[in-house]
Image 1: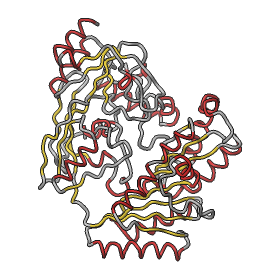
Image 2: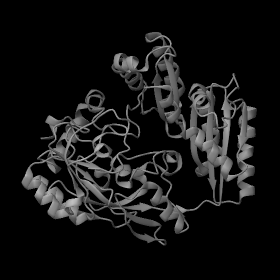
Image 3: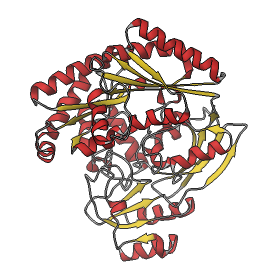
Image 4: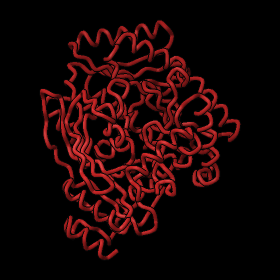
Length: 476
């Protein structure tokens, strides 16, 4: 291993091969559920350096763990405890390579922080719409590696839909340049889509060409109290009908989830927090190319129609950008407030929007019957069918003991309910190492066979992020 380390130092420079000191930022996952030990953390500054690092590791059959901002929630970018794996950090590769305003594309390196990608587009008078809570620290390579979603999927789609081309280093250390920026290119298998969502198990994404959009002329945000999840889904249907493609975001939040924000972040104003007849609230956003006045008229007409329909009890429309940001800040603060409440069991599930009310009724009743007093923190992206259906310990219980004793059982109950309603146990967070067993349980044998075949064909040595997505022994 010392010979490999010497080679890596020659490639990227000795200061960028980290083997000593506090490496927890690279060896520990964001939720601190897993802490590994790396042989080294290697930080290349170019695609050529990445290729040379991968080739050196391939020659010694040394496992590589590609890592961006290390903000993932499924333990997909941290090393194991063996001390034999190399963490390949892309954080030094942050360049904006080019902007093509006429083609509405932006090419950036994989280590570019999402917020900086958004800003580069804004500086050109354009919009890159991917938006999520970790955008100040997550990287575009990680976003693409996990096919991240966020709050605007209902209009713009997941990361996959926002990417036109990739540059990738293969497990053999070769470079595939697919940064054409074409919207039509039917020349064989779509390799771009193969690497997006592969979580670093098939190669290393080093750069991407992304779709840009015109900045909306008007952006309107509303917060609505609704009497049930069924009403929230009816409001979603009305919003699609009345706003069309202008519907940008549609978030649902249970009142218990919002009560945690009230309790732990009293400086935030949570609308309708005391409205007992409203078990859920909805945050919806409309982005429009029309004038502010015209767009606001249509938006308010939608809310009036929803009020008459009975699917909205009360609503408030933000009067300024600051007010709109304040409403979104409440929504984005739910995970932080839940963490303040204590350890909890998180889920990232998707169900067809039309079936979410029945799923929630079924899963709520099932968990309450099996674990009396359990508290359900239900919120998420209703517009695209993605719920963060989280489970908190009973109010008087010990959160650590609850997590230790009940997590496996709670996961089984929730995932069985998801399967019953035709959903997915992983909507936008990926499989990582955390849910490998669940993929084996819920994915079809035919699909698993194809996945294993792809992994074997592209990474026959099994060195790329082993134990992530597929079981380690099946990657060799």
